[in-house]
Structures are given as C-alpha cells and as structure tokens.
Length: 330
Image (cartoon, rainbow, N blue to C red):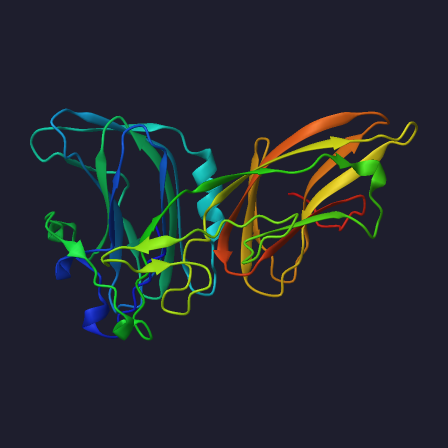
C-alpha cells in the first residue's frame, strides 16, 4: 500500500474517519504474504491517531499472523524512518483470530498518536488463513470508525495543496542475484558497484519501482515516467533480498573486502539487515561501511543480506571494495 500524506489547511483534505473516509482498503487472499507501508504527515491543528483494521468477510473464523511490525513517529526535522525498519525486523509472530460471527473485525495494530507536524512511518507484515479486508484509518476518536467509510477521493484538483497518495502494488520484495565476485580482481579504484531505487535499470542495478493503483479511483496508476500527480509512489519500503558469492582466487594473498553504501547529497535513509544485525542511517553526505569480510587465499563464501529504502527519494549507490571507506557498522 502506498504513501498517504494528509495536509489539513482545508477541511476537504482531512482523510479522517470523522469525515467518513478511510485512507486505504485492500483485500488480501488466504496464505498470501502481504505488507502495509504508511508514511503520514499530520498538518492538521489537532493530534490524530493512525490504526490498521481487519475485517473477515467469510463464514468461518480466520487467523491473521502478524509476522513483523515497525512504527516510528518523529517531528519533520528528525526523520526516524530507520527506526521503523529496525523494529520491523526484530518483532515476533502475533496471531489474531478474526471471528466469522459477531463484529467479524479486529485491529491489526495499536493506535498510534501523531501530533501536529509529526510524521508517522510504519511497516506491517502479515498473512491470513482466509481472505481478509485490511483498512488504514486516521481519526481523532476511534468511536468514529463504524465500517461504512469510503476511500478518500483522489483528485488532481487537490493535488497541489492536499496530497493523499495511497494504493496497492504488485509486490513488496525482490530477489537480487549478484554475479560471483572475485575479490582478488578488485582494486582501490575499481569496486563492484550497483544502484537501487533507480528510475533506470543497468547491468548492475535493480529497480523496485512498481506501478501503484491509486485507491478510490477507477483507473489512475502511479508509475514511472508519468507526470504529476501520477508519478510513482511505490519505491519506499520494498525489501531487497541480496545473494552474492565471494571468492578469492589468489594463491597466496589474504584479502579483506568491504560492503558499503555511498554518500548521497540528497535525503536518503537506508537500512541493511545482515546476519543478526539490522541498522539504518541517513546517507546525506555520508559513506556507510556496513560489512567487512576476510577471505583466505582460495577461499569462497556466499553472502546474503537485505536492504530497504526507509526514507528519501534519491537513488542509492552500493559497492564492494578492498578500500576501507572508514565508516564502521556500529
């Protein structure tokens, strides 16, 4: 699901349950892993709450397993999206039974209070034993949620001052298979490089930007290459699953290789999950060394890791090099 942003200078921009709106609602089929991603700025003059709801349309009970959850709330000048991703990776499974009788509904998350000029970022991974309807709500009072709300009406007329982008994408993770990297062939000036969050695909680049069908519209698609207000909103929170074989074909030299993410002049918060560690950092003006591996002569190993763009829109440059950029994984 996409990136809703609520600007409250005018009442028409309040996508709240009190105004009979939900932000997003999508069906999720049985046994289908899914993820909800939210990034919401509260420019209203009052605190609002954000919560995700489950509804069982079937005739038998279903069990929804929340596999991961991460939320972070921050002021606009302290963007903490990396904390969202870090907590997403360490949460344990929680099972929620959604009954077939009675209310047929439960909440997937707690209610998160977002004060004026604060940003909430969240990721929730889950799957269900049966078809379930998932709804993202913003409200002042939870009692305003009655279940008959409709999608906030996306409109080009409102797009300049009131922006609510929300929708559904085809997938939330990508497998990235890198070529075998012979570290003995690397030099200080020729690292192995690749790009993520890039609008173009080259030999060593991957592109997680997928079309998003905007909620509450007949056929509006936000996708690469379209002018505003239909530009893409689907490039955040996608999980890259990387796999790469490292080998040292030298017959005598022990070689140390470093995985790092290059400095970015624009706002860009990136996260890496490697082994038992998950860490994120803003990359503005910073080179981040997140991995160090030593291979003996003739040794080889397979490395697996995951990366996520947690905030910002700029492309991210990655590299493996024998040159230590000096930014430690801490």
